[in-house]
Length: 262
Image 1 (cartoon, one colour):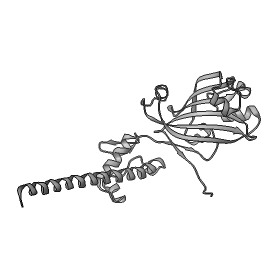
Image 2 (tube, helix red, strand yellow):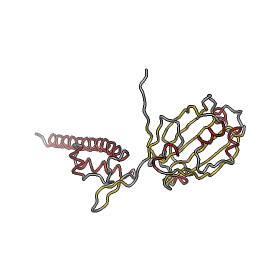
Image 3 (tube, rainbow, N blue to C red):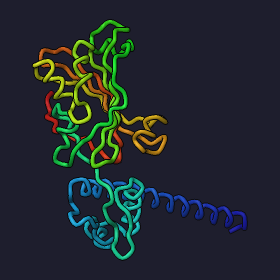
Image 4 (cartoon, helix red, strand yellow):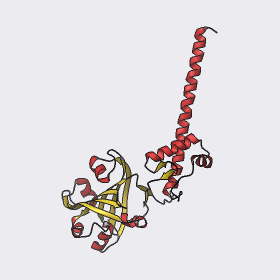
């Protein structure tokens, strides 16, 4: 074989080796993400009641994964702030996410009552002209005053969500003297109107935390937060509460029970 052909053949083998190595790395990264998803579910549903995860070798055997894959999966969970490695102890759970159901119309304090007391820091409350999109959703003329409320909600002293709320002023004016620090707005609305809430339209998406939201939520600037937009109606169909709620994604998990219908 001429020298030039031998060089080409060797170069081809090198390229094949590099490609195979990259393919193995991609496969291991995919497997690590899959394992992290399974372990995350266990973390969030109390699957490790002692607060300590099994040894890496045990996880590798249980999930039929390599030790390297297990280590990468745990690295992903560490980056999320859910676990950390403690010398002499192992991998321990250091943070938890609280469940927020999407299949029932409930205030945050009602939703999380089993996990502790939700407190509200009322940062702003008072009449404000309704921006056109808000007026349209609440069925009031543009520029009409509505009640605007901004609250920081905490659970166990930790910031959980930043809530921006708009309420028609004929109802909202009665909230000006209400105990917004200790009572969900939903309960107050039902008490004021004497009517039950009926349904809500919701949109959930991930957004980047702006400087203000990040500072208030004590989250890194530019971090992703869960943004829940919810328009709540009375039982008679009148829209009475438009909310934009930014949740810390590392402290809340959304869940619901869905039924298939065609």
